[in-house]
Structures are given as structure tokens and as C-alpha cells.
Image 1: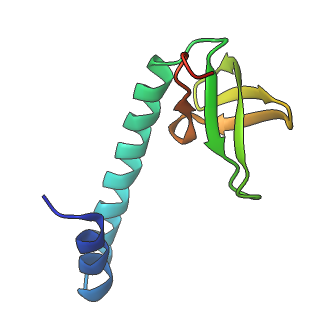
Image 2: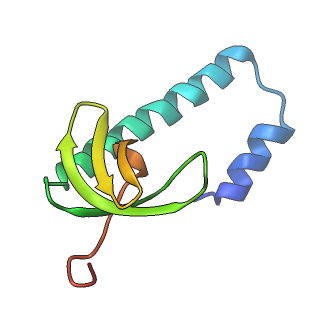
Length: 96
């Protein structure tokens, strides 16, 4: 299996056609959507989750308030957030 560094190098250093690059992008999007579905299935309202805010880089821990089709609403001390499910990590209930 290739490491992420090997994959990145192959993408950057080789010459690819637009069709090949589009195919790679589609594969990444599909994998992200699958990851989001798996994450959403493991979440319940009231669960404690963790994520990194994309704009500030701040690590946020909060409680799941709503699970929608694309986003999960998380309430934290910093406020309420709409977060893509694939960005969330479930906090172990023992350590919450």
C-alpha cells in the first residue's frame, strides 16, 4: 500500500490528463461522502464530538444537537456550529 507522501508525489510529479485528474477528484469526493455516512451512522444526539474549526484552527469540543443530511449541528462553549460529518471525531464517553 502506498503512503500518503507517495500518493502526493505521484500526483504532483507526473503529467496527468484532465480526465485522469477529474477521475482522481471524483474518487476523493466519493471517499469523503462515504466517510461522512459512516461517521453519521456512529453519532447520536447528545454525543460529545471534537473537530478543528477550519477558519481559526481552534480545536472545538461540543455536543451533537442535530444530524442532517450533510451537516451535524454541534453546540459548544464557543457557540453553535454546522460541521460536515467527516470533520467530526467522537469523543470517548469514558473521557468526556
